[in-house]
Image (cartoon, rainbow, N blue to C red; front, side, top):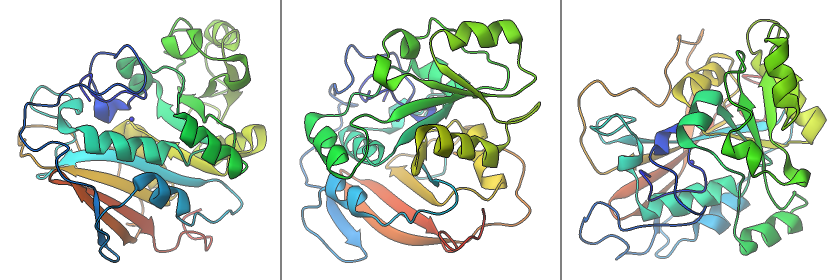
Length: 295
């Protein structure tokens, strides 16, 4: 996954009422200059007219004994993950939508917490025909699968994600052995339900399920902050794509990652900087990614 402007089934960081279709963009904020400048790459070398679809698709994400895990989030200049109304959707705009779609296009599985899926009224992924063709050419499925993380199985089987899913891309629910049996049976009617822990979600086990059951090589996490924090604490986040929105929010807004501190900070290297309409699109990669560190 902006307040109805950005769809493609936004994550919690792109909150707002659901739009009628997956690829709609309405006028954002009334700010002058939106869409007036092309996307530029600032780092590692200047590129005057950068294509985010080509850039994110060409990034090296080495295969290992688990899927490569990346996250995509947004924050204001002063670090707020939501706007003044408590929603992060107001932070985004059309340029952010382009990057969001490009990042989704590289994932085998899009993973999000149940709270995010419910708040955003997730639907099935609907990439453009060009993205579908590119995915097939890379040996991926035409459409990424959606995985919902819920130890309590608090998500309703009537959620739009389940109602509108195609038979060849059923959603996946990652839960725990101790989950309520009746809720598990109800969700099993509309999704693939797999256990990834006894009483709490075990993140290495969750990734193993996505690898073994779905053949996932690249997993994109779209939040929420608690889910991101779990991956960080487990040392499993290989790549962070962070959009910096050109606004100041202050207040008590959350961070993009909200949870207990990990045993040690994981060093990240700046891999790319894009910009458009005052937004910065940062791609960081863990310095030990692909070497066995953090796994």
